[in-house]
Length: 93
Image 1 (cartoon, one colour):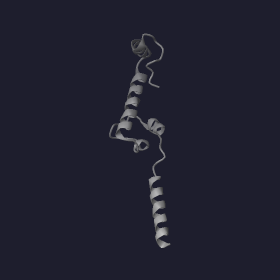
Image 2 (tube, one colour; image 1 turned 120 degrees about the vertical axis):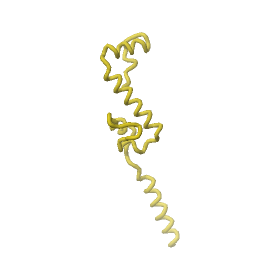
Image 3 (cartoon, helix red, strand yellow; image 1 turned 135 degrees about the horizontal axis):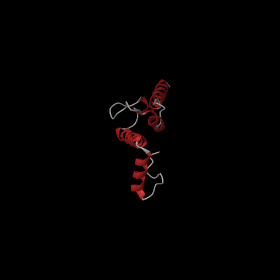
Image 4 (tube, helix red, strand yellow; image 1 turned 45 degrees about the vertical axis):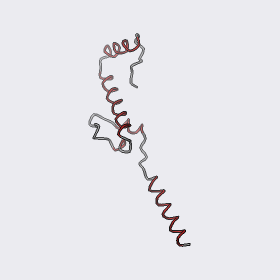
């Protein structure tokens, strides 16, 4: 009986230790990234992501920021080169 109780307690402790992960989502990470963040300086919402996933999210953020910082005319020219018309096909949203 004592061995069974000890095993059950150990199993429960291991289960809850495994589920003690943060509750941040990829969307939380995307929303938390700002100009002060970099490849090695992650926001806390991104700490549980793999380096590959974080790099992808950070790259998307940088491209979106660069695109949104462009003049409207430059955005339209980039869109025109993308597929031959100005139709929002390059918008990184």
